[in-house]
Length: 233
Image (cartoon, rainbow, N blue to C red; front, side, top):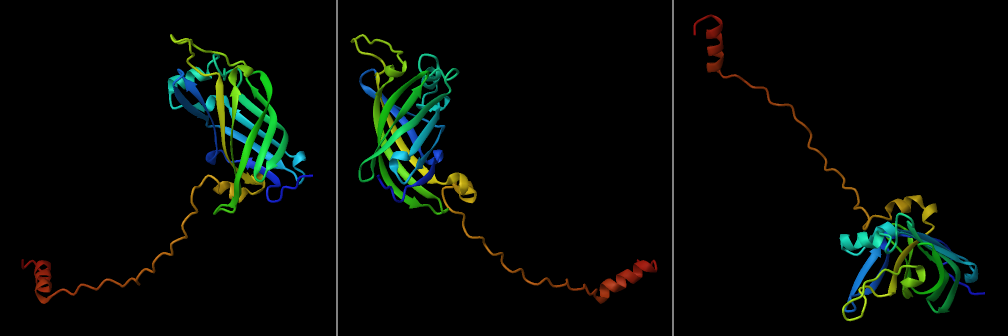
C-alpha cells in the first residue's frame, strides 16, 4: 500500500491558474504553441494511491494559438471537428508514485471518436495554502503523442518532401488544483481573485456642524429699508 500523506482528498482543477497546452513543429523549422482555455476536471486521491482517480475535460472550441485563422482551421473537420466532437476527455485508470513527488498517471484519452491509453508523468511542485484559505497543489508534466493515433491526419507536403504540420505533438500540463473546492463555498468565491481585499478604511470623524451666524444689518441698510417702506426712496 502506498501512503500519500498531504495530498489525499478531493481536488478540483482551478482553470484560471492552470494551463493545458501543446506544441508542434510547423513547416519543419519552427515551433507553434497553443493551449485550450476551457479546461475542467478533478482528482480523488485515496490513502491507497491505487484507489485514486482523476478526470480532465477539455472544450475543443477553446483552442487558442494566437492566430484566429489557424484556430478556425483547427476547429474544423480537418482537425478537431468541434461541432461533432466538442470535448477531449482523459479518465485515469492508474496513478503510480515512481519517486518522491513524481507520479505516472495512466488512463484513456479520447480525441474525436478514438480512445487510446496514454501515461503522463507529473511532478508535484508543492502544496501551499493561499491567502484565501484554499489548499493548493501544483503539478507539471509533458507527454509526446502521435496525433495520427487519434485520426487527426490532415497535412500538406512541402516542396522539400517534408510536411507542414508535425505528426508528433507535445502535450504540456501546468495544473493548479484546489482541495475540496465544492465544499468550501466562501473560499471558492475568492478563488478567481489574485490578491486579498484591503482592510476596510474607517471613515474620518466629521467636525460638528455649527449654525450659520445671523446677519446683523447695519444702520445704513436699516435706514434704506425704512425709506423704501414709507416711499422716501
